[in-house]
Length: 91
Image (tube, rainbow, N blue to C red; front, side):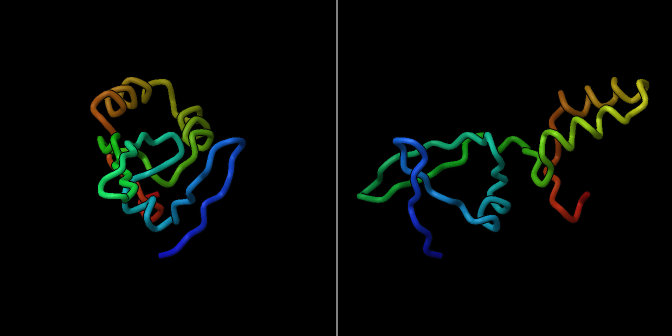
């Protein structure tokens, strides 16, 4: 798949197509490592621990705000244990 380099301020940007981002578990704020290998740019996803994909932080906060207070301890445990990957079909 071909794409174009864009510009954001003084930096160049690379747009990652949605199917690639979804397959890699990337979301806004994901951390990646950039390096050059034999004249190629290699992008390695660093935070593969179990990202939540498919929901904005605002939607998640709105959802959490609707939960009864007795669910907060359970939610804290789920968050501390790590979240499973959620795709659009899983919502």
